[in-house]
Length: 164
Image (tube, rainbow, N blue to C red; front, top):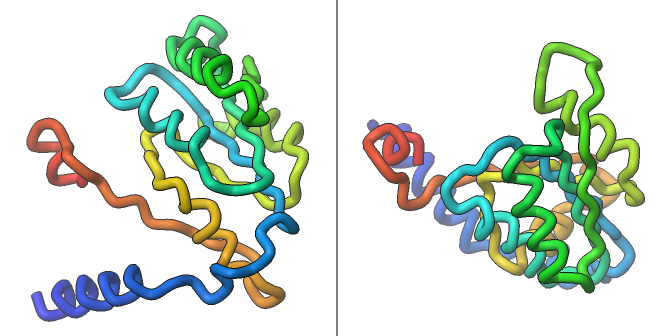
């Protein structure tokens, strides 16, 4: 129990601290955001829309769906039409490179990504407008990868509440 309390205290303290390079020239670091999609989950449209609303100068959104009839493809298309100024593409079809369906779904979008910096984000992630700025702010010559722990919020049902 003490370890849980200590870890919670450390996490809260860290979240209140700004990243080391939050004032960096972000225009130098274009990012490709890969969003593998499958099925329609509650909140999907709001989750995806939050990425269209990112406050970041240069990024692209690459949505990948293995089945063209997947309802997630329609949601992504609708958002792409609502936000025509955001560079975004919908990639249909997967590549069978292994046993992991998500990896198979991501292969083509990874190959089509225009930028060196890649963010892979699942469809159930909703972000604040400064999310990308805060992630990229951790990059420098000694950092090659940044990971971001996802925190659940308002889970519906007992299982979702425990997961959150």
